[in-house]
Image (cartoon, rainbow, N blue to C red; front, top):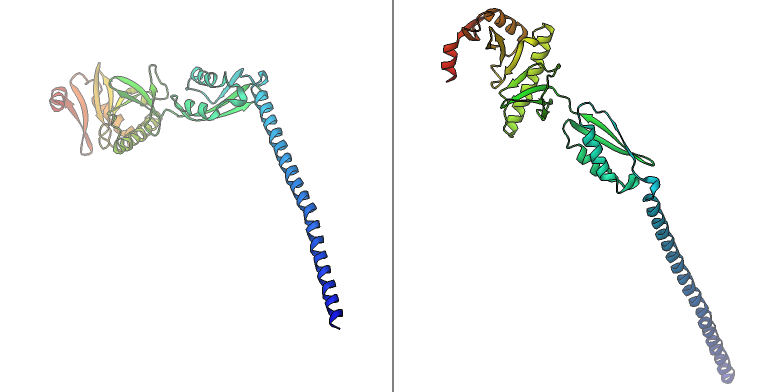
Length: 283
């Protein structure tokens, strides 16, 4: 019996050994297959990268081709801004790069630094054009600073010198605050608002052409500067009812500008200020 058991145990061990050997033989082809797959995958990735580089090079060559060469600029929305300056900026930035590779953001930033330009939209019209659409700052008042008139917008920004008559802005502000502080900016915005209110009221009463300047150095005591008898006359116009106050002041001073330099409020009435008294007061 013992001999039989020993033989059976010996036979079992052989079977186990045989099974182990089979497993080790099966593992080798699997490893080889995995390695081949990895190599194939790597080659596929390399090929894909090569294709991408080739496509990028071809695209770069195509985008730099004569087909996309810059030939024209289209400008819209311009009334006061300089077309010549806009065209110059676009040509400088797009002539060498072509339309496809032009730096649109750089063009936009440079155009928006030009006088009267509030916003600029820059795009491409393939194959050969750059399109610029402008939103301009609207002049809301005329300001006289040290003898030179300037156009200003509603935010108090000086837009450009004005060297010719402005039919829509027939008179200029004096007393502009040239400081760069927040308080000065807010004061100037208020001056522009007062100017527009005066202009509207005086136009409705056909008085705007009689005014040469408005002195708004004091926001509480604005004055209109007119001419009478060949002399300048300063008329107090208050903070409201600009048309009524100006009309009353003109009636009070008409024909007396050589003797009286100003018209002030005295309660509900208006008082003429002799020239000598006004000169003394100014000194």
